[in-house]
Image (tube, rainbow, N blue to C red; front, top):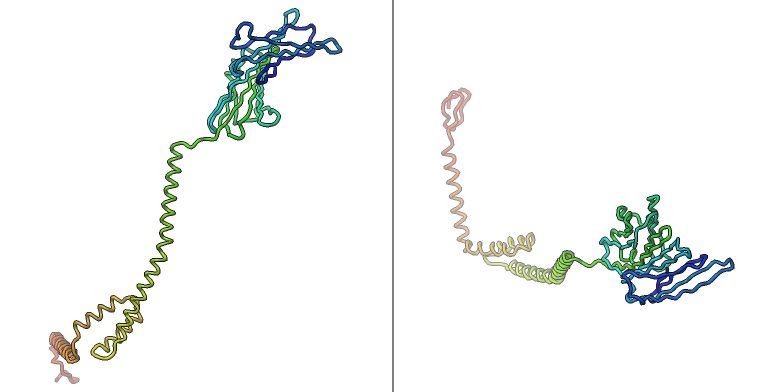
Amino acid sequence: MEMTDEMVTCSSHNIYPIPQVTWATEPTAAQGAIENSTIKTTDHKGLFTLESTLRILGNISNRTYFCSFTSADKTQVWTASRKNQGDISQEEGHALSIPCIAPHSLQNFSLTWTFTLSSEPTVILRYDSRTRHTFNLWEGQAELDQDLLLLGDGSLLLHKPDSEEHSGTYTCTLSGLQSRHIVQTKVNITVASISVDEQSVQRSWWCTAASAAFVLFTIIVALPQCVRQRAMESRTASHRCNGAGLVEGGPHKALNTTASYVIVQHGAECNRLELQFEAQDGVTGSSSERAESFTVTSQADTKTEEEEKAEEPPVEGNDGLQSSGLERDGFGSV
């Protein structure tokens, strides 16, 4: 059988005598709705070829079309059926079952699945009920249910279909001794949509990236300004320190020498230098005051030394007597 958008064609070759052709649909069509035309030809051996055509009734995906050839003595019947199912869409990564169910019970049958994308059909799976042998070109990607096969259900299960590799036309053919049933299905595997959780993760990632970019931009813009401002402050402080060290003469001359040394060694510590100036300005008065302070300090130091000597314990001699501090002669007498 062959099917187009408008016609279904059923043909048989090398038959003698001429068989009878009948059509049926499922669901059943109204009485008189099925109109067919049959063409008979014969070859040089006297064998007949019959080609019968039926007009499509209504929606093509809603019906299964049956064509039967019955021998003249009515002892043999050959039946073919075909159904073009509606398109199936599924999101990639999710399991998909493509239906293929025989219209009647079959014994000793074979099942063949073909896949067509843009070129010739490719056999992707074949099963023989007599040998229980299975040929699977898409091992790991597609499989059949062995228990359902015995009941005439040859549906194909795609585990994780891919939008590019598994979108196309699938044809299932169930063949018995005198019957053939064909089911054709167009499958469209769509690109997986982003889930709510993935959207939240992406939104969080973009927020984090935007925050990081903002911080980095702020650092890049602000850091040179901070460096320039710090350099200006350092130059201002350095000028202030140098100005303090250029004072000569007067009571602070010796002080300025010390300040210049501090500036050379610790130029950045201007605050410390200012504290030194303030401290010495508060303590140092005139030259006489410094001399008087020195005298008082010297007298205090002398007094402290005398008190320490007075508190030292007397040294004992060899005879156990206390020494007065004067030198002894060789016999121990003073």
